[in-house]
Image (cartoon, rainbow, N blue to C red; front, side):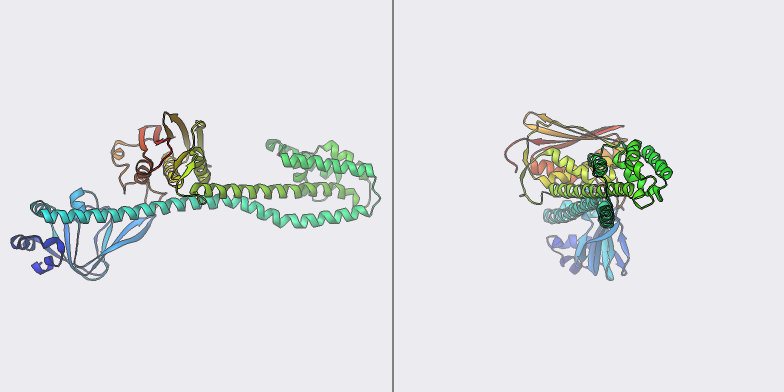
Length: 467
């Protein structure tokens, strides 16, 4: 049985009169837990108000599919009041870290006690505030980390292809340059007609221009490559398939190849094939270099986007272009937008820069765009629209998904609410987004939703001050 001394070990019960303390002891139901026993799991209904007299209770919460420690209750302690007052499911899992002795008071008995004693009520609500603040802080931090993890995965995915292109270019270009140097030395040992040499150089330079400017039609490249391959095989070149692609990429014509190689067709020396091989290798080297440069440029753009996204080199508040933030966020989500998602933009470029917390606004765009991607299940349309409305700007992010059900609408902005599966994405993040927009930028965040069209609207003031 619970004794009065157990209750008086807690500040919460000291304001109660002797009669009420005895009343609590008479009604409390004794419980014991062995190490590892679970008292209640995350998502279940509350079981009542608990008084922990001996032992230690661990508190965990599922985040990104992992059970993460949030805190613990060390005896003497009490808990369970939040679920009684809010009638919400338990947001955490409670399990015994040591053998525990505790007592349970029913919801009705706790509420009777709460309403009778003003000091008891005050202490309870002070405790509720602290616990909700602590859990909210944990959830927000996990949301930020989840968003960072999503973007980091996307950035790694996007960096992989250009990085691989640079590696391939560096690996292959060196032996190719060595082979070109050997060919030049062999050619130097022969007495070549200067005019003929100029024709080869002109063909090479024309191919260089086509490769650099990417003038060759990608759709026609396969047909051109097959045509050149047939000509090379007819000419009698071994491993003709190796030369066909770089020659086709340069846009060189069959007539040009015939003109250049005609005088060497019956030459018994290696000069018969070397001119064409030299030309193909020259084009191949330039293609590798341009591919490597494009890869390096793409990596630079992605790094710059991430830097701009997080505003790493600027103060907390900056003059920011809303469109830059939206585009930086889209680039970092590019890996998710390749499956059949169409992005439509309707930007009002007359909107001026605003003084804002740039990295925090980008967290808003991240959550809204990520939610839109999930809403359309990888196939559909996402529309980004901006407009200038008097002394405010508005950003609309719309998706063509199924819409938000009536049962979900009223809970969208709750701190711990999500419709996503455990471990999926960043969570809805809408409570954090609203806090950033409304508390940090004196704006508003609203939404409308019908099947096939859900729109989240962010309204921000255009002014010289941000609070």
